[in-house]
Length: 319
Length: 51
Image (cartoon, rainbow over all chains, first blue to last red):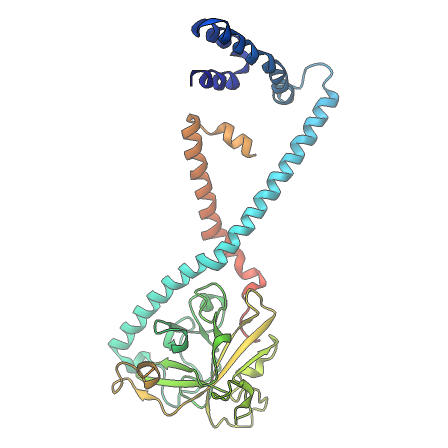
């Protein structure tokens, strides 16, 4: 204990170690302590020289015969600085990954809560003014960035509910799933299309690839419930076996805009849609933006008034 | 750089430890709440729409 203390003190001020070791030999009893004190003293001498070489030599640089030494010091300082810079850069990149995966979730979840409150409040005040024009709404008149519906996917759990925002710019999408502004409104003939983040920003569409044909996607608007079911053959799980010819799940390149056309995949504006589709787009594979994962669903039966079904349509309540 | 910071921080060992943590927290907060949200839109990781 005592010895440790003196050793530490000696290390901090190498020039004063001589008196301290003297003290040790004085205070502690006998020749053993004195010998150990002098043992301390021996290796300290080179260390002191060391300190002068790297520290003081750099600082004043006036001592004679400095040339080779100071160059070595410069190189050492440079290499150390480079190493520290690289390590720092690595840590910053790691922190960015943490930010993308976890911190953005916090921001988005908080924003979703605010939006939920706003939307519930708006609907409570006057559903006819703030809700979308239904049924025959046509092009959207909702301001960008405003929440206008809830999306529920029972396959992702009963607590999966997100506010749908108008618009698909980064500002909108970091708040929740966004509605392609030129696509149909919920329940309308055409293609109600949403984009959502796969990983980070609340990860609303993280598990889209786990959906199966026949799974329900429920949209809640100011006064109606709309239940869409994922296209494909529910008995075999084959996404491509839908009678409409539209796959329930597909992976496309980012340029394939026709997935959000009124009839998904039909690039012909003269053909009027005869069914109400729902399309969800997100990035694929996870952590990448190379391709897009697309889910197509179709409206299953007419919309149900919220007044008659306060707890939700059968897809939510009946399981 | 880190050596210099450590040397400049006041208050002995406890002071230096507290000072380091405060600095670390400050830099992290600056990155997480200001720098990263600003940098993020310029990076290609978040394209999820078809266009």
